[in-house]
Length: 468
Ligand code: ADP
Ligand code: MG
Image (cartoon, rainbow, N blue to C red; front, side, top):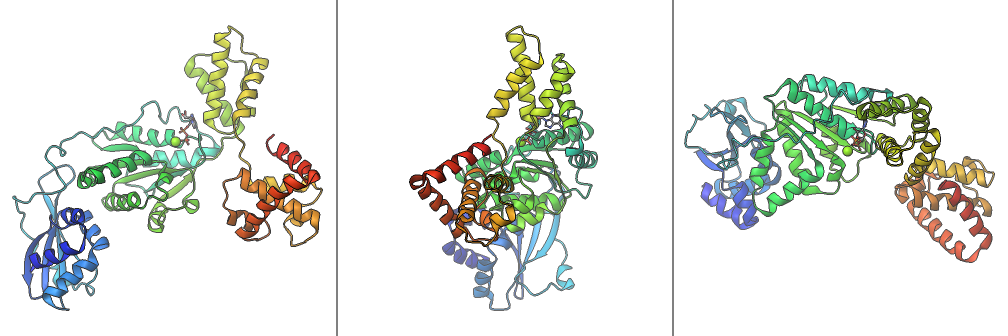
């Protein structure tokens, strides 16, 4: 019966998929119209159920008639490579609700011949390098209001990986605010406290690359198996998976496997889960299961402390007023702050100059200029309104007065130019207009710039204000 099913399935799916997902299946038993099949892992079972349940069902019904049922048995060695397999029996979801009686079928005896096709010889005893950077520790991750929640949650996770409600722990925030640092610190701390745990740090980009390679080299099973061995998985910059549905799919299953088995998952992202785009809903909802902790921009006091710790680390002294000047003016993020301090140290040692406020000013000036300001739609509307002596409400109102319409169109144009917002978003924030209106506004501005000198003057004034 099973062979007939296989033949039917083989004709209906791609060869590679067939090899990967159907050849490892063993038919064990057929009683009445229930077919028992054995699969190598729970992961495998979920994958089949998710991707192939329809074809399985039709193949089975063709053979056994409409009352056909399918039951899975799962046999797999555990992640430590102990020979003790766990056997579990799961229903196929296309069946009626499972009756307990059916689940009570005696569990199959361990079969020593059984090979887990996810395991290729050699991979089992591979030591997984954690890829952690030990320079990133909790000790040198300074606490401030901006990161307190994230840092404390990270500590809690490090003390009890997989054993807190913070699973997954999602750290999010803008660039250079310390997500990667904190993610490593958690891993480093776990390794110190629980050396036997398998920890892996990986960027979502490398994860994607690995996955794509594994598909190309037809080693996807090894890829998946590898991730099943991990106790603490840290994936950095998960927003990188946006729009990559294949990788999201495999990550979803790995995530479920780890989570169900009490393993810890730590993720970072440049956006809150609610704001992530092109990530499947089912993944986003998983991301929200645990705790999402934002790392915000550090306040002045934290910036001073961070600057001091860099100086202390490098054994450099710097006058207090200089430190404060730098901390006051470089506020975009911690990376820029580090950059400014380091370049200040370098300047003074190359030119054998003392670190004075004046030197600091020239360095910071260069720094701040290169740093693109974070301009928001609100900010643009405020600047444009002020320029035309309007208030923002009037700017966004429904009035068709010509000078207000032009001001509004300018605000939309600059919002498109200086923010990453979608046209729809810009529209809705400009008095609830639609994306076509924004597009029209941008075209009108382009035209007016060519034909209307006065308008061009306004445009340039505002543009200058915005890029200041
Ligand atoms: P992100 O991953 O959020 O872009 P990083 O973790 O790469 O940011 O941090 C940028 C730099 O700032 C790193 O060198 C990091 O060590 C440093 N940094 C960030 N936050 C802190 C902090 N709270 N204390 C000390 N250094 C920090
Ligand atoms: Mg990072």
